Image (cartoon, rainbow, N blue to C red; front, side):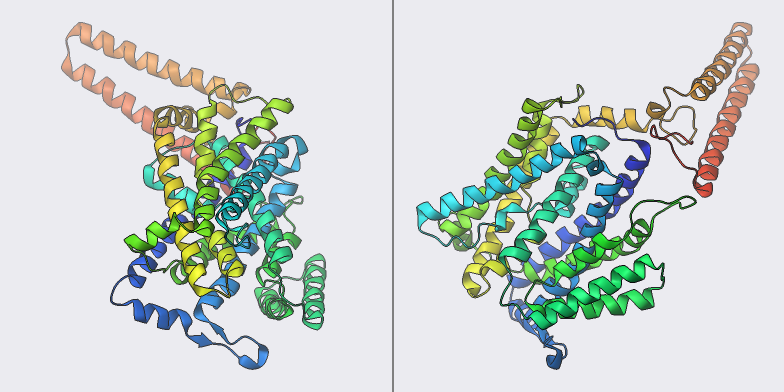
Length: 491
């Protein structure tokens, strides 16, 4: 468990997490802005903007700004999640059932236990059970924002586990929304939405290209799905799953990867932060925060996120190690898994969405549940930060080992241990350094400062030349789209 990733997978993961981390920071800023806006004398303007309606009523789309953000912009987020899931299933960590078992078991347990904690808490307190799904979701963008803020350099395997866990988590969250939060069905609209998805698939198989074809089709299909009674975000994930995410001969990236590369910045940088801006603005005061810990529904959400997620993810991972052949990476210990499990308790985007769906007919309870989501996520973030900081030096050492590229080939040395050319480059590098140091020693013995300075300057020039050559080799390989074998080396 948590072993080193193949280089192509790690490269993809790094690019994805870089965008998600920036998006997570924007999400954090948007959530803070919403709280400030809703708890100052400007609160009236916040409610006015949030509840303003726009859109064609003849098409059933006269929605408030808040609904446009939740049902419209979040569809883009789920579209990217669908592509992520498809790629993981055909080319990523989930393609191998043995490798997929760990994050799948951890994700399932990480959703079942919080739901159970909520049900128990709400039942004992005499509260409503409709919010059982609120604490089940992990917000990967917010979790990565926490990592960026605390400056922890997690090894790629831990980050891969977190991302894969979140992808599986999103899949089950989508199923929960589709199955448990679907209102009365309009079968005509649903039939039209299904027909639109079939047409979308046929166009993809025919090789039709052009955003001017797919974007209008996607908008029509989204509108039909919204009017059908099924949550509109289901249309987004369905389209994401239909894209081809495996590479064919001569392709540097699959169509799914290309589309994801284009859409992910919009999703992480605009769609999700805007959703947070119009969903996280709840009144917060000392009395309101106290009620979070006294009402059964809100207490269930907080305990589900903080306790349920941690116990579920950690317990699921331990069960996978206990009853399968999987074993923990020798560079890590179970304290690291506990820190990741606590980090998974940060539930924001999907938790807020499910909270609105579960208590939509009761605005007061909806606001309280949102406050509970924010409180639980904050507690989980603080707990995870403390646990991660205890091991930050070890993480940094592992991260540096993964990134070290002494031969300047453009490929980390850890992936080239079986490559004879790597060891020849290292030998030449050390021989050149040894020769330079011998010259320095001879110059020092002669006591000639000018000789020593000349040798030092020559050594620096040689080092710069080697660095430039390594950069050129790496850029040339990247520009050529060189394929990689399973070990991540140029084929």
